[in-house]
Length: 248
Length: 131
Image 1: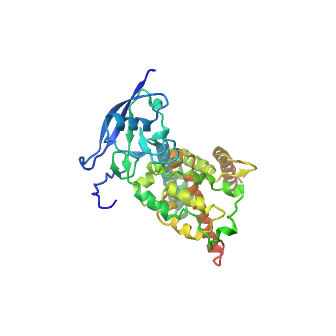
Image 2: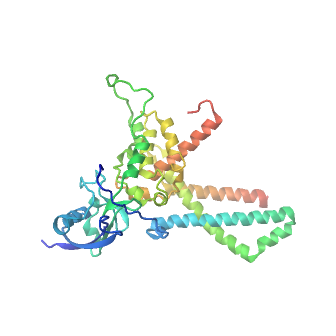
Image 3: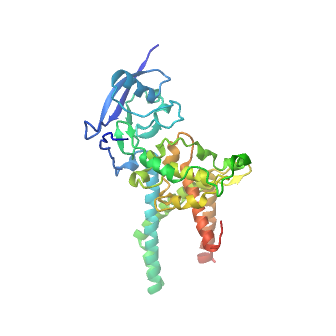
């Protein structure tokens, strides 16, 4: 069986040796069913063991292997090598994030944002499990279900120029997750989450570039979640202005 | 991380040419820049109205008849229409209306809003000029 050869250009940044990043080129033989992550694994196993990158599941579930492939934020496990046939494939660490080494970025900022929006169901009063589960209809589930598909791969942050300008911006995935809980009929944490998503660097920083929703590998539409959160916030503010004694 | 030595992280700055990186970014910038013409036209029109308020109607009309102003108004009109169309489309993307089991598509919001814009503009012209 004949094999094609891909030319892969990878960003190298070795902080213990280099003060600046540089590109290193590798030749990788590949079959039709191989993805960019397979090429990185080939390089690490066969050519250069020092190449560093994150990966885990190889099947678009864990969200670890994001990188900029030819400038676009993508999962390396979901990008076939044959789609780039005949040209050099450039692989860079995801845009906007600080780089720790080679393709590995610092996720700390995103992790803090995830925790900040309290991604769990908040109840005024927890009922003991013996009293049964909190029930929900199919229609109630549909209101938020797409936003619960997020795998925290951070591609949406890499695609967001607003986040690139201001890293304090709460950003697409964290807001989509906040909205997922705000819209969940079992949740009662609106009053806790609203001040978080509506602070200065919350949803109002978004100027609707929309690229977050374009790059999402799981079909989540964070742009929609952000705008819906804006609408909810604006109507809530209006309500409390007109009915100060409780309009929720 | 424990006591392991931390090396400096590489921090990258957003390039001022970021909006040339792909077509979506470029179209976003076109959308944002066209709003500048909306603002400039508004300023121009406020100045025109001030001529009417302080001086005569003739001053105002002469100002509007200036070929440079007519030229700029035409350009501003094209950009304003483009700017409006992009937001009509986004309106449809952000607040789709649920009809039965299906949801409206963004282009439907665009078409509906343009029709409404034409009707409202005609009504305004009729009320102020033609009546």
